Image 1: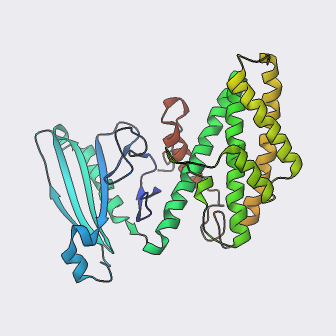
Image 2 (image 1 turned 90 degrees about the horizontal axis):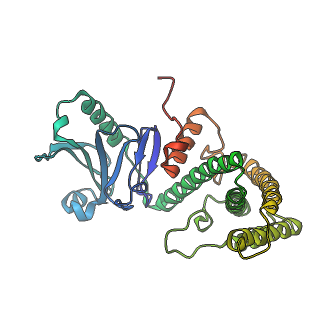
Image 3 (image 1 turned 45 degrees about the vertical axis):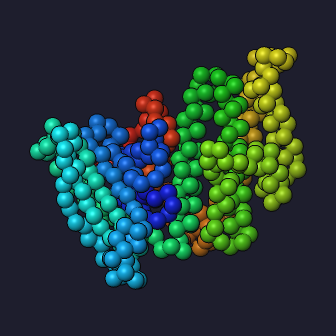
Length: 333
């Protein structure tokens, strides 16, 4: 199983590692209730879960439980039509009203596969954990960090493919992305170490569409300011930044030769490895303290088979391409 966090940090659930979260993967879904899930392969139904403030959806229950509903139970019902069968589940937990649905084609009614999937859906519903209001921002921030690491893992698939193909422009572009990512994560960890805090500066890790983010040059400057890199490394990265822009934006209108791309790509790969080692040093420093992303409290520094499978699943979510898809099924079963 892998955990999934409601985008606002309101609740957590455990879903099968080989199930896809639909809202971030399909263009006709938004990141709001209902949140949809289904198996990556051969889906025959869709599980959805929604949450709403209890005071809005069930004010009488909220009034009768001023300190929140402490025991979660689900009331089941059906809502079928000529096309789809829908199993509905209603619950109240702490300050949230919860609605679960399992939806499938009416022609599959009575299918043994549906019964199995429905059983999984019920397990998911029973795994709900409501996050205390004071911790919801941290939960949402950790979710952004998890997506960041999944995207970073996926980028390595692209880099390996580019290296195998000898595609120098792709190597330069992806390596530049990864250097930027390593420095961003190093900055987050360095700030946590300095302030002895769990707070995550997600402005370094996530930029929504239409949102003004932190540009690559500013990341270099911040990394120098917080002594992530020294002046020599800053100068090297600045030089590579100029070369990359020349390659990407002025390959046709400049005198740069394709032969030159090989040397530039090599310089980028060397800088990438140096930056990776810088990040590794910060991760190791944080792994022995009780706070921060890799601190002992959250256990994210532990590398287990399940952790690797969850990372592969996150990379699959980033790619959504068969070419890069990894198997995440538990072979022990």
